[in-house]
Amino acid sequence: MRTTGTILDQIRQVLDARPVAAAERIGDGFVVVVPRQLVTLAGAGGQISEHPAIDAGAISRNTAFVGWLVPWLRGLAEGTTALVPSDPTGGIDTPFCVEAPGFPGSCTDRVIQISQAPSTAIVPAEPPAGDLLEEVPAVDAGAPPPASPLVEGTGARIGYGGMPLDVADASVYFAEAAAMDLDALIGGFTPERLVTGELDAATADSVRAAMAGIADAAEAGGSRWLVGGYYTGHVYNRDPSSFPSSVGAQRQAMDAPPLLYAPLWDDYLIPAAVEVASASSTHPGIAGILVDMEMYGTVLAYTDMQAFDDTTWNAYLDTLTDAGLRDALAAQPVQARLDALLERGILGDYVSTLERLAAEIGARYRDAVRAVDPDFVIALYFPGYPASWQYRGLIRGLGSPENPVVVLTYDPWSHPARADSVLAGTSMIHVGGPILSHFPPDTLASVLDSCASWTDGFWYYSHAEISALAAGAPAHGTRAAYRAAISSSGL
Image (cartoon, rainbow, N blue to C red; front, side):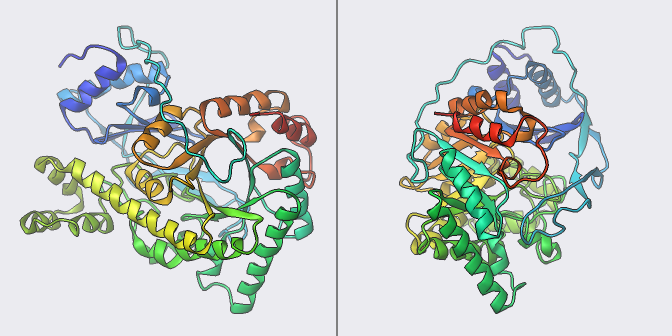
């Protein structure tokens, strides 16, 4: 098989030649190539980027990687490239620490395991010789972002990280946010605590009162609060044995539930959001909720082919009207399910149906909170731009034209991808941002300006490091210098 044309053309030709389902380990990160034609990159630092391989504007500019990818895919298509299996039970042991109210194991040095991909390969440090490294064509950003009631200016300005439960301390945070002209400050609060049954009635009422008090501090300080909660970080992690596991095509199980597992949403996450909406309806200092979608204690995010557990499989089967097809698919064991879809030519229908079902969950969430507070803002944090069906569907369901979902990631490149989502009917804005400690104050302004140029504004992590209430000294500069840099950025 010979491929010709641009990098984009060559990748498309290889992937169109034969559906590829493969996962490859690369150094301290990994790449996953799946039949949805997505390339997923994850760095050793935990950041993930999912790049649609048929969207020139979303392909990584890493020419060494792309130069390796095309011949590797060609070898898979021709059957000359073999996968090297690794231990599917293996993982990377890494210390993990997080500070958030109610988060299991808060700020400990406990070790978590990040699952490895099920096969291995090495990417060369330098690209191979040849004509594979043509420039990726420029792509117009296309559709502009929808207007968000959260954003007052031309781009979002959001701070993230930490929220003192003491109202006086919270007031300091919000005064700083107002001085930096932020649209909102995200602070962890873990509202899921209110619906898991872990609190007695009196304690739950005191938590609600604390949420109201912080909200009033935000309003008094001229700022707004996005109440921080978790996807799996609290509900699932406090009792994982009570949930099914998400399972991939090669039976690789994640320490996370399938996104389509309805009880997680209907019994916990939606009621928790309604608790926040109930507070915001009478305390306008609350703008809405931020759901941290990073999956702590396992791989950080779903990929398209993490979709063959019984929960996800049966959700698709329940939509089929052809009884013969339904029965034939119902008889397939996990490892044969991807092949069964490919052989019948229905993999595309499978993924698009799952995406629609995810959108229905998002719509239930949206309708529940907007019934309580019509102006309630829904924001989501992901380590990288959300491109798999789980997230495409969920975001489509959560957003509405008058109140789009606010998506925060560490990917500051997304105009074409976000524009494509908007053109496809998804109401969202995407905001890229940095981890503050990675940059000194004198370069931070240009970093934030770049985020604002290539995404729909900027956000940063973590405000707890630069507040006047922070202990010790930052690694670079002063806390006041950081706040001044943020004040001057993205205008």
